Length: 372
Image (tube, rainbow, N blue to C red; front, top):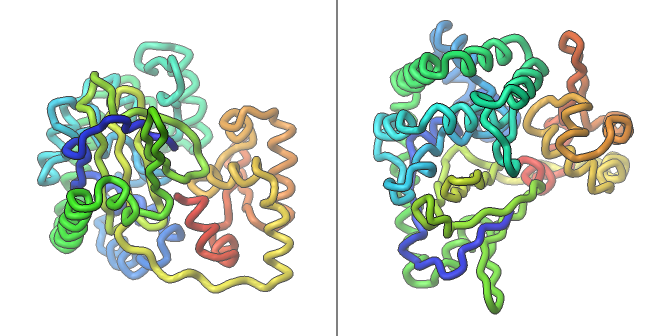
């Protein structure tokens, strides 16, 4: 992922904490505890304390945070007058979210698993029947709950927006208020440290302590931030339609994820974790050799990125990687033979997913790489 920062003044680089974004990460941890082995205790205690009604509502909307963190959690990045800064409280962040128009909101909400508004010249599913049908088809592959929710969002976005705001407010009352009081101090400490580095060592020095995967590349006529991920893309921190600059958000719940918001018309945002647990223990040499051989092909490695975040159909993998369905099927067979993926049927759809428990035995470097 490349972010053009050529000529960007230091004051346009913002380190900040976002309550809404951190809530998104916390919800992701609850939905995908295997991604976050160091937080199993918190997951168990929090899930046990949820009232059945709240737990059920979280299941209805979990596609917003299961595969990744939806861009709606970074609503400030779409609003030019925020200066690239999120709200100080969850209420402030939710007020910013309410300011997105319906097309921004729905396109961002459905992007993770139902559409792709990152693609050039993509149309809003609220206006374009083809984009709407594609979003519903992809939602159907995720199950009846997501399909029903996608129908609701496309037919009555205002009702769903109000429903989601109440859901996030109820999360704050149930568990996130306590979480934010606890982690807010950690995030503020990290932000002060990064700002000191930015003042004294410049952007390169600050990025060096964000993550080894985030680097500054300087050439004669351009400067860009490179985020080493298995996905590719590019954006600019110089878009005059948005507040020029880049925002970096620390997260206490983020590891092993390093996320980049690079949506057209939105300010670039990097989510980075402030804590990294120790590496997992290695597997046997024979097992490592067999499984790494399956992962030696670059296409299969890229597929693992998608399969690590969510179960995918063969057709989805083929479409996302611009290959034919038979070719995608051949790669899936290799991964399955190596015991790296699991397969289950949901109605007429066959879903494949990376077995994170097995992958963890290959070592934390690989696990962090595919989940980054």
